[in-house]
Image 1 (tube, rainbow, N blue to C red):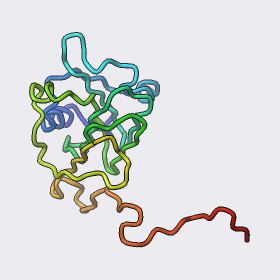
Image 2: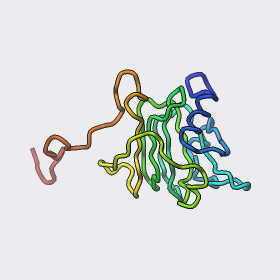
Image 3: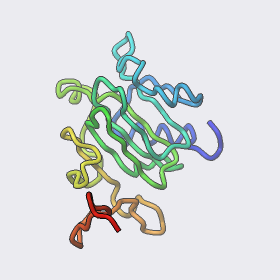
Length: 175
């Protein structure tokens, strides 16, 4: 991986923090790998290990053409998980400003979740308010201490959260 991305130790730290070990990794460096992502890959290897794709130098992903939901984790250079979104359905887009890499895997079924060490991530859970991830997705974000030193959370206020929504255009109105 290039120096501007997450290193091997940071990647290992992120996978341990997420409880996604043991796993088979595929690093998406080439354009076609990055474009297609998990769409053309099986979620598990022949040995039963889950596949985790790593997208270095990435802060947003899409789930276009996906046939199954994904768990998506955004990490910084040191391997700290900045944001974790679980169960992202097809035709969604998720981003996290400040992330240098994205890890994604197929969301395991409930029976597999217990056997693969899914548990508390140390983050806070909050439901999606803007409809960006739908389909029962859970969004987990890192506590403020693990975020950027500037204190910016990278989250955006929901449209119309503190003011009334005004349409940007009107139909049938001529000027």
